[in-house]
Length: 233
Image (cartoon, rainbow, N blue to C red):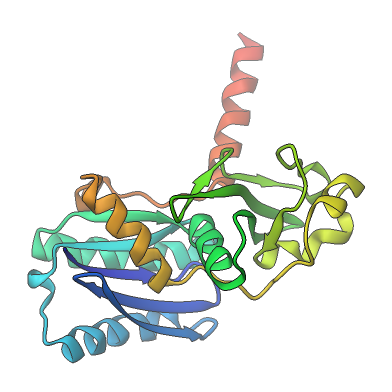
């Protein structure tokens, strides 16, 4: 088994988790706009309590997004700094997958649509199916206007995450296909550590300089620019 430190600051919540031989300790706090000040002290406290130094870890994981642009940068930058100094691999973890796993564990469901509020009347969204106890994405993560959300075939979807504040703006088909939304399911480092451990066991760690956040909105803008260039050629 491995020793993995996990960080997440992608939402109003700030969380740190330490997984040692499969046993997870977590510090989870909802502290809007305090992530920059609180994250490193939380890391220091977590490692100190376990009697570990950063260079004794096997890897560092972080919530790579989607989520708050500023928040994702805080976790990414902190994880990169720690990993670079200790020459450790990084494990980027999807925030939407973490929400799906939390929802499945808390509510005993196996089909989850995870969302986060992307602001500007848009949301981040992805549908997951639980297989062998872990969430498997059935589509690509997207950023979308609420009215454009389309779910995979079949109903009985469990709705999790803050993006469901836009439910009234979604189609009747979506509204009929989901359960009553559970808004207060956050991506959290404790659950992310489980996903990170699976990624580590598959050898999916990357070097600090190659670890990248996922914004989605930037990717959509880039694609649109690319499409426009093709049309003008």
